Image 1 (cartoon, rainbow, N blue to C red):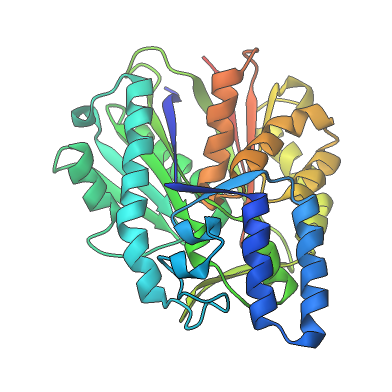
Image 2 (cartoon, rainbow, N blue to C red; image 1 turned 180 degrees about the vertical axis):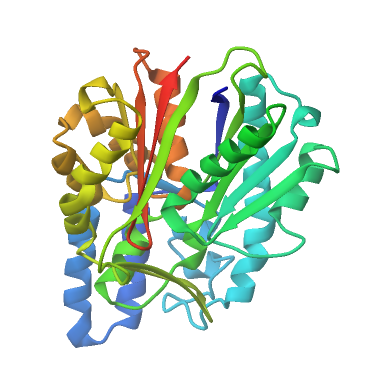
Length: 371
């Protein structure tokens, strides 16, 4: 018996801003908050990140990033210094309704793609690291989708960009223990709610890269439903040595704060090949067997590092760059966006390797083989 992927779906946050809008917004904030000594350095760094980030637009739960006049703000205070900054409580008041609406949209699309009715779902796995509340998104989503009240629910929280892999692995473990299970996996992230105003490079990088998105997948045994896209061959994870400080995610008084160290690409370059070879060996495959390299596009330098470590061609990571360009880094949802786009556009039926990275520094991978 194999765990099979039967459907995927994605959803966008309600507002969208081009990188031109984002750059203008952040420039105004820096000029309002920085001292004379700080402003030139911060703006030069902002310009450099925007020019090299490879992002064209991002989606957000916050309308203000598209506004030219702070008097029109609906989330931040009506001044470019954004003071007083919204509290974590205020940010969670937006996270709750918007995240559930986005999760519902992605889930409905995945269920329709799989040809599965909500009443057929036996297990729901929700992955998110950008918000917390209870009764949680699992319960509200169960009610909004019309899932059965005895649907078994799991919430995977605060794992960051590799969370989707743990959702996938949880689905596989459920199906292995219950061949009649139909598992709906949903990843939803509202990263832009946690916009920060400090002038440190890692804060500016985070403000430039992260966006909001939702994605879903339907999993079941290979003989449980009709058709399907691909079977899970193997999944694997690895925590790199001496890298705990390279990617961090903390709950602060004014939202969640991200630390993304410049050493992350170097760590991936150093250990990426060994991890991928181990993943493929366990899948009884070689790099030449993989027809779809679905790399989590955490940022352009991360994609570069994986490409170089695994000795891929630029065309192998073009799909990941296209998702980065169109949506930015949406944390756990991003790799499912890449998978969804690959399944929509694929011209081959070869195996796929999904790769993701997050706090730890953790490397995650999965191999899928088309049916």
